[in-house]
Length: 493
Image (tube, rainbow, N blue to C red):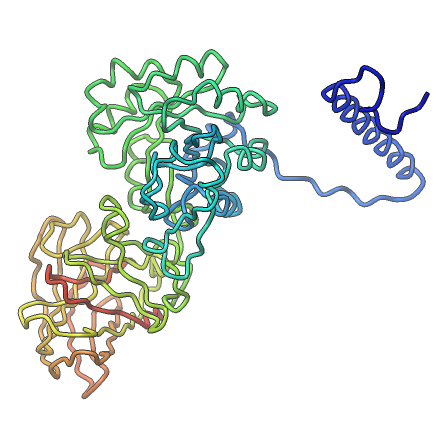
């Protein structure tokens, strides 16, 4: 007797019926494929579009350097979200880094912290939330990426792996340290899983043996606190990690151990170049579209969009989202309003590669003026995107145009390691008024640098100093007073 619904066959379990249904669906697919081949013989067929080759651990480590999207490239998109992973993949990242936490009801999700406070503003432990509760939270990266950044859901691990396990290498870490068996079981359920998954953990963590028994390659990472145990722990792993803040000697020590080394987390091109010169092969990168490229993406700022352009960064990423200058889409400006001496480098517009070029910008103290002894301005002519601040010895040389509230403009040259700089020229212009925009341009040519204020009598000064002609620049707030300073209409011609 034929039964249209196999679940109604006598003695059939639901599991057996489901297996039969899957078998039948596969037979139908094969039959359809065969009929397609028959039809293809009767009429000309267009060549099928070939998908891009899958990234595997072997192909990844065959590159030097290679890139891994750290947290899905959190300098560009809300970290550990489907949007971050998909955008990183679209930008060409061959590998993704995924952190895993489990909810109270056992759902594994992609999330770095054990609590939700930093990413969502809700002070709750992931392990204390059911997935139904967690799914209502949103990753809010507006403080880091700009006010127009969309709020994104926290994705299930299986949703991310379903999309990328076959096409990308995935570095995966159990952040809670209690989900090892379940996480490995999920990894095992994907085809060719040992070709695509790398088990990731802090070097002293204990789960590495379980991952190796399942056949997975492992990556153990070393920061300053783990470095004294390098000789003891490094032998446990296939690949080693070196934290970006380690000095050259420490990174050399990790590289000299003789295993492939990945540096995390890489935000700048200068760091990329520094660690690869030390022998690092892999870059776990938070700024994928910028660090994977070498040229300028724009010639004008994009503050009006309300989102931070790839490559635009504050002077530090160590102090968290609180140091990010505020992007004000309404006035199409960026506001340096933190109490620290700070800077913001528009990497999206750098490097400037023309020998003869003009850098234009507008600057304003929007609400009040600092004292006449304090100043803000623009540093330029730097060879790379090393972070820059005044009163701190810089690793890269360049020039700094200082603007004081009394209207005085001073051009300094700052050599590497010199916190004060050398005064090259000073001019007097009209005193500054709070809330009024000033217009400036800096004309650079091989023999000279001319700096001008344009919102008045047309004041200008010149120097014949030729020492620095690099293509990177920074917007600077050179005082600890909380009085904000604002910049807009940056352009390079």
